[in-house]
Image (tube, rainbow, N blue to C red; front, side, top):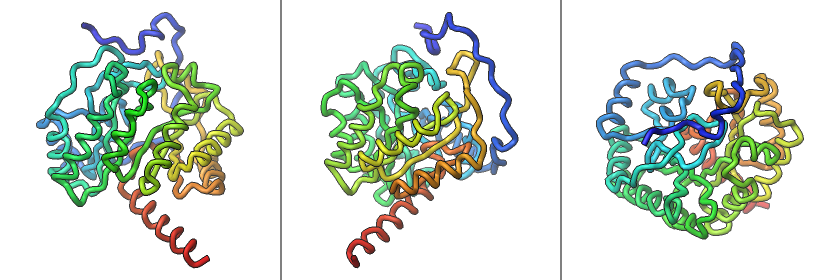
Length: 313
Protein backbone atom coordinates (compact mmCIF):
# COMPACT_ATOMS: atom_id res chain seq x y z
CA UNK A 1 0.00 0.00 0.00
CA UNK A 2 1.43 3.37 -1.00
CA UNK A 3 1.83 5.81 1.88
CA UNK A 4 0.31 9.24 1.38
CA UNK A 5 1.48 12.37 3.15
CA UNK A 6 -1.46 14.37 4.50
CA UNK A 7 -4.20 13.12 2.15
CA UNK A 8 -6.64 15.81 3.36
CA UNK A 9 -4.46 18.50 1.74
CA UNK A 10 -4.16 17.01 -1.77
CA UNK A 11 -6.61 19.38 -3.47
CA UNK A 12 -5.86 22.41 -1.31
CA UNK A 13 -3.90 25.46 -2.46
CA UNK A 14 -0.15 25.38 -2.31
CA UNK A 15 1.27 27.42 0.60
CA UNK A 16 4.56 29.06 -0.43
CA UNK A 17 7.35 28.74 2.13
CA UNK A 18 8.64 32.01 3.55
CA UNK A 19 12.40 32.61 3.54
CA UNK A 20 14.00 31.93 6.92
CA UNK A 21 15.42 34.92 8.82
CA UNK A 22 19.10 35.04 9.69
CA UNK A 23 18.49 34.08 13.35
CA UNK A 24 17.32 30.58 12.37
CA UNK A 25 20.52 28.70 11.67
CA UNK A 26 21.56 25.14 12.50
CA UNK A 27 24.80 24.76 14.42
CA UNK A 28 28.00 23.14 13.15
CA UNK A 29 28.52 19.44 13.84
CA UNK A 30 31.15 17.08 15.12
CA UNK A 31 31.02 14.78 12.11
CA UNK A 32 32.69 11.80 13.83
CA UNK A 33 30.13 11.70 16.65
CA UNK A 34 27.28 12.43 14.23
CA UNK A 35 28.06 9.35 12.11
CA UNK A 36 28.66 7.19 15.18
CA UNK A 37 25.12 8.03 16.35
CA UNK A 38 23.74 7.43 12.86
CA UNK A 39 25.47 4.03 12.57
CA UNK A 40 24.12 2.80 15.92
CA UNK A 41 20.58 3.80 14.98
CA UNK A 42 20.86 2.24 11.51
CA UNK A 43 22.39 -1.03 12.74
CA UNK A 44 19.53 -1.53 15.20
CA UNK A 45 16.99 -0.50 12.53
CA UNK A 46 15.46 2.16 14.75
CA UNK A 47 13.51 5.29 13.85
CA UNK A 48 14.05 8.74 15.30
CA UNK A 49 11.79 11.78 15.25
CA UNK A 50 14.95 13.71 14.35
CA UNK A 51 14.83 12.09 10.90
CA UNK A 52 11.14 11.43 10.37
CA UNK A 53 10.04 14.97 11.31
CA UNK A 54 13.04 16.70 9.69
CA UNK A 55 14.13 18.35 12.94
CA UNK A 56 16.39 21.40 12.34
CA UNK A 57 18.57 20.43 15.32
CA UNK A 58 19.54 16.94 14.15
CA UNK A 59 23.15 17.83 13.32
CA UNK A 60 23.82 19.45 16.68
CA UNK A 61 22.07 16.77 18.74
CA UNK A 62 23.53 13.75 16.95
CA UNK A 63 26.98 15.30 17.30
CA UNK A 64 26.43 14.96 21.05
CA UNK A 65 25.04 11.40 20.68
CA UNK A 66 21.57 12.67 21.53
CA UNK A 67 18.71 11.16 19.56
CA UNK A 68 14.97 11.07 20.21
CA UNK A 69 13.67 7.57 19.54
CA UNK A 70 10.45 7.21 17.55
CA UNK A 71 8.66 4.01 18.54
CA UNK A 72 5.79 2.02 17.01
CA UNK A 73 6.89 2.72 13.45
CA UNK A 74 7.25 5.81 11.28
CA UNK A 75 3.64 5.89 10.00
CA UNK A 76 1.06 7.94 11.91
CA UNK A 77 -2.70 7.35 11.90
CA UNK A 78 -3.40 11.09 11.98
CA UNK A 79 -2.66 13.88 9.53
CA UNK A 80 -1.74 16.99 11.51
CA UNK A 81 -1.16 19.79 9.02
CA UNK A 82 2.09 20.98 10.65
CA UNK A 83 3.83 17.60 10.83
CA UNK A 84 6.19 15.95 8.34
CA UNK A 85 5.71 12.40 9.62
CA UNK A 86 4.07 10.01 7.11
CA UNK A 87 0.31 9.37 7.40
CA UNK A 88 -1.13 5.97 6.52
CA UNK A 89 -1.78 2.46 7.80
CA UNK A 90 0.96 1.49 10.29
CA UNK A 91 2.73 -1.85 10.40
CA UNK A 92 2.29 -4.24 13.35
CA UNK A 93 4.34 -3.44 16.46
CA UNK A 94 7.92 -4.69 16.61
CA UNK A 95 8.01 -6.73 19.82
CA UNK A 96 11.81 -6.59 19.85
CA UNK A 97 11.71 -2.79 19.94
CA UNK A 98 12.00 -2.51 23.76
CA UNK A 99 15.27 -4.47 23.61
CA UNK A 100 16.54 -2.51 20.58
CA UNK A 101 15.80 0.87 22.20
CA UNK A 102 17.41 -0.06 25.52
CA UNK A 103 20.47 -1.42 23.67
CA UNK A 104 20.84 1.79 21.64
CA UNK A 105 20.60 3.89 24.80
CA UNK A 106 23.37 1.80 26.35
CA UNK A 107 25.60 2.03 23.26
CA UNK A 108 25.11 5.80 23.07
CA UNK A 109 25.78 6.04 26.82
CA UNK A 110 22.78 8.32 27.26
CA UNK A 111 22.28 9.83 30.70
CA UNK A 112 18.83 11.05 29.71
CA UNK A 113 16.77 9.27 27.04
CA UNK A 114 13.81 10.74 25.17
CA UNK A 115 11.26 8.35 23.67
CA UNK A 116 8.31 9.45 21.54
CA UNK A 117 5.88 7.84 19.11
CA UNK A 118 3.49 8.35 16.26
CA UNK A 119 -0.23 8.25 16.99
CA UNK A 120 -1.49 4.67 16.88
CA UNK A 121 -5.28 5.02 16.88
CA UNK A 122 -5.43 1.53 15.36
CA UNK A 123 -4.30 -0.04 18.66
CA UNK A 124 -6.79 -0.72 21.46
CA UNK A 125 -4.60 1.07 24.02
CA UNK A 126 -3.02 3.59 21.64
CA UNK A 127 0.35 1.98 22.32
CA UNK A 128 0.44 2.65 26.07
CA UNK A 129 1.57 -0.88 26.92
CA UNK A 130 4.37 -0.64 24.35
CA UNK A 131 5.60 2.53 26.06
CA UNK A 132 5.46 0.64 29.36
CA UNK A 133 7.58 -2.24 28.04
CA UNK A 134 10.20 0.11 26.59
CA UNK A 135 10.52 2.10 29.83
CA UNK A 136 10.86 -1.08 31.90
CA UNK A 137 13.43 -2.66 29.56
CA UNK A 138 15.40 0.59 29.36
CA UNK A 139 15.61 0.79 33.16
CA UNK A 140 16.76 -2.84 33.28
CA UNK A 141 19.71 -2.22 30.95
CA UNK A 142 20.35 1.41 31.94
CA UNK A 143 19.50 1.84 35.64
CA UNK A 144 21.24 5.23 35.87
CA UNK A 145 19.55 6.72 32.80
CA UNK A 146 16.62 9.06 33.33
CA UNK A 147 13.71 8.60 30.93
CA UNK A 148 11.49 11.17 29.25
CA UNK A 149 8.48 10.11 27.21
CA UNK A 150 6.69 12.31 24.69
CA UNK A 151 3.34 10.61 24.22
CA UNK A 152 0.30 10.95 21.99
CA UNK A 153 -2.99 11.98 23.62
CA UNK A 154 -4.51 8.46 23.87
CA UNK A 155 -7.78 10.04 22.72
CA UNK A 156 -10.76 7.68 23.09
CA UNK A 157 -8.51 5.01 24.65
CA UNK A 158 -10.07 5.21 28.12
CA UNK A 159 -7.53 5.04 30.93
CA UNK A 160 -4.85 3.29 28.90
CA UNK A 161 -2.47 6.22 29.53
CA UNK A 162 -2.21 5.04 33.14
CA UNK A 163 -0.02 2.16 31.95
CA UNK A 164 2.65 4.69 30.91
CA UNK A 165 2.45 6.40 34.31
CA UNK A 166 2.74 2.99 36.00
CA UNK A 167 6.22 2.59 34.47
CA UNK A 168 7.27 5.82 36.25
CA UNK A 169 9.09 7.81 33.57
CA UNK A 170 11.02 10.75 35.01
CA UNK A 171 9.30 13.15 32.61
CA UNK A 172 5.88 12.76 31.00
CA UNK A 173 5.65 15.10 28.00
CA UNK A 174 2.63 15.67 25.82
CA UNK A 175 2.71 18.59 23.42
CA UNK A 176 -0.27 20.93 23.25
CA UNK A 177 1.27 22.22 19.96
CA UNK A 178 -1.00 25.21 19.28
CA UNK A 179 -3.83 27.36 20.61
CA UNK A 180 -7.37 25.92 20.79
CA UNK A 181 -8.69 28.21 18.03
CA UNK A 182 -6.34 26.57 15.50
CA UNK A 183 -6.94 22.94 16.43
CA UNK A 184 -9.40 22.20 13.61
CA UNK A 185 -6.85 23.31 11.01
CA UNK A 186 -3.63 22.19 12.71
CA UNK A 187 -4.59 19.12 14.76
CA UNK A 188 -7.94 17.94 13.32
CA UNK A 189 -7.71 14.51 14.97
CA UNK A 190 -6.97 15.88 18.44
CA UNK A 191 -8.88 17.78 21.12
CA UNK A 192 -7.27 20.66 23.01
CA UNK A 193 -8.92 20.11 26.39
CA UNK A 194 -8.33 16.34 26.22
CA UNK A 195 -4.61 17.08 25.93
CA UNK A 196 -4.73 19.45 28.91
CA UNK A 197 -6.68 16.85 30.90
CA UNK A 198 -4.12 14.14 30.12
CA UNK A 199 -1.36 16.27 31.64
CA UNK A 200 -3.56 17.12 34.61
CA UNK A 201 -4.24 13.43 35.27
CA UNK A 202 -0.56 12.50 35.16
CA UNK A 203 0.08 14.96 37.99
CA UNK A 204 -2.94 13.73 39.96
CA UNK A 205 -1.69 10.14 39.81
CA UNK A 206 2.01 10.74 40.47
CA UNK A 207 3.22 14.11 41.78
CA UNK A 208 6.85 12.96 41.47
CA UNK A 209 6.74 12.76 37.67
CA UNK A 210 7.70 16.00 35.95
CA UNK A 211 5.13 17.05 33.35
CA UNK A 212 6.04 18.95 30.22
CA UNK A 213 4.35 20.39 27.16
CA UNK A 214 5.37 22.22 24.01
CA UNK A 215 3.89 25.01 21.93
CA UNK A 216 4.70 26.15 18.39
CA UNK A 217 4.31 29.78 17.38
CA UNK A 218 3.91 31.26 13.92
CA UNK A 219 0.82 29.28 12.91
CA UNK A 220 -1.54 32.26 13.09
CA UNK A 221 -2.12 32.59 16.84
CA UNK A 222 -2.01 35.86 18.78
CA UNK A 223 -0.32 36.76 22.06
CA UNK A 224 -3.49 36.57 24.16
CA UNK A 225 -4.15 33.04 22.90
CA UNK A 226 -0.60 31.97 23.80
CA UNK A 227 -1.02 33.36 27.32
CA UNK A 228 -4.32 31.48 27.68
CA UNK A 229 -2.53 28.23 26.80
CA UNK A 230 0.06 29.00 29.48
CA UNK A 231 -2.72 29.50 32.03
CA UNK A 232 -4.44 26.26 31.01
CA UNK A 233 -1.20 24.30 31.35
CA UNK A 234 -0.42 25.83 34.72
CA UNK A 235 -3.94 24.95 35.91
CA UNK A 236 -2.93 21.36 35.07
CA UNK A 237 0.28 21.82 37.13
CA UNK A 238 2.58 21.39 34.13
CA UNK A 239 6.19 21.91 35.23
CA UNK A 240 8.04 22.62 31.99
CA UNK A 241 7.03 24.53 28.87
CA UNK A 242 8.88 24.66 25.55
CA UNK A 243 8.09 27.34 22.95
CA UNK A 244 9.57 27.13 19.46
CA UNK A 245 9.13 28.52 15.97
CA UNK A 246 6.92 26.60 13.54
CA UNK A 247 8.91 25.81 10.39
CA UNK A 248 6.70 24.85 7.45
CA UNK A 249 7.98 21.50 6.10
CA UNK A 250 6.58 21.85 2.56
CA UNK A 251 4.13 23.76 0.41
CA UNK A 252 1.45 21.18 1.27
CA UNK A 253 1.65 21.86 5.02
CA UNK A 254 -0.07 24.48 7.15
CA UNK A 255 1.07 27.93 6.00
CA UNK A 256 3.54 29.80 8.15
CA UNK A 257 1.93 33.00 9.38
CA UNK A 258 5.15 34.70 10.48
CA UNK A 259 8.54 34.30 12.12
CA UNK A 260 8.86 35.47 15.72
CA UNK A 261 12.10 37.28 16.50
CA UNK A 262 14.41 36.32 19.41
CA UNK A 263 13.19 39.25 21.53
CA UNK A 264 9.60 37.98 21.26
CA UNK A 265 10.72 34.52 22.43
CA UNK A 266 12.45 36.16 25.40
CA UNK A 267 9.24 38.01 26.22
CA UNK A 268 7.18 34.81 26.06
CA UNK A 269 9.70 33.13 28.35
CA UNK A 270 9.39 35.91 30.91
CA UNK A 271 5.59 35.72 30.80
CA UNK A 272 5.63 31.92 31.21
CA UNK A 273 8.08 32.09 34.10
CA UNK A 274 5.81 34.61 35.83
CA UNK A 275 3.01 32.03 35.58
CA UNK A 276 4.98 29.62 37.76
CA UNK A 277 6.49 27.05 35.38
CA UNK A 278 9.55 25.44 36.95
CA UNK A 279 11.40 25.73 33.65
CA UNK A 280 10.75 27.46 30.32
CA UNK A 281 12.72 26.99 27.10
CA UNK A 282 11.78 29.57 24.49
CA UNK A 283 13.75 30.25 21.31
CA UNK A 284 13.32 29.93 17.53
CA UNK A 285 14.91 26.46 17.42
CA UNK A 286 13.51 25.13 20.70
CA UNK A 287 11.95 21.69 20.28
CA UNK A 288 10.56 19.24 22.84
CA UNK A 289 13.73 17.18 23.17
CA UNK A 290 16.28 19.91 22.38
CA UNK A 291 18.81 19.98 25.25
CA UNK A 292 16.47 17.67 27.18
CA UNK A 293 19.29 16.24 29.31
CA UNK A 294 20.48 19.67 30.47
CA UNK A 295 16.89 20.80 31.04
CA UNK A 296 16.12 17.76 33.17
CA UNK A 297 19.12 18.45 35.40
CA UNK A 298 17.89 22.04 35.79
CA UNK A 299 14.34 20.83 36.56
CA UNK A 300 15.60 18.61 39.37
CA UNK A 301 17.66 21.44 40.82
CA UNK A 302 14.71 23.84 40.78
CA UNK A 303 12.38 21.32 42.40
CA UNK A 304 14.90 20.75 45.20
CA UNK A 305 15.20 24.50 45.73
CA UNK A 306 11.40 24.86 45.68
CA UNK A 307 10.99 22.06 48.23
CA UNK A 308 13.64 23.55 50.51
CA UNK A 309 12.00 26.99 50.32
CA UNK A 310 8.62 25.52 51.23
CA UNK A 311 10.05 23.63 54.22
CA UNK A 312 11.72 26.80 55.55
CA UNK A 313 8.54 28.85 55.23
